[in-house]
Image (cartoon, rainbow, N blue to C red; front, side, top):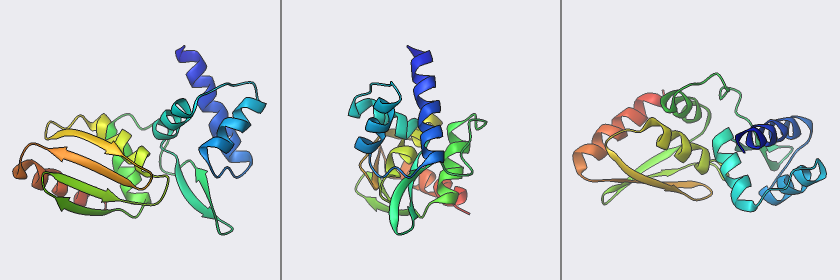
Length: 154
């Protein structure tokens, strides 16, 4: 099964290099045309794992592989640092959470990278289209991670 996933993700990168793709449904259709069947949940996971973001191309938001996010990145921190450098991200506190606001289509990549860091302070995260909610057990943890994130954005 892992081989099929690798082939599908390689095909996704190839597709994005050849033509603009605006939605996950459009991506699923393009993959179907190339013989890959994938559910919306599978496509969503692939988008997050590949670190795809949306970028404006001729006034239209399309999926792209960030230039600085490559397969050579080995840790979640490296991937997170690259994403935070490439994307505008606003960080706010809300109760026992940090809220990260970014470009539409980019939150999943940030959350996946954050999860890969396996930072002890992070209880969990959940991502929407342009927002990541990061939960913490205490305020000291929030402050430590907020500081780390700020250091990565420079």
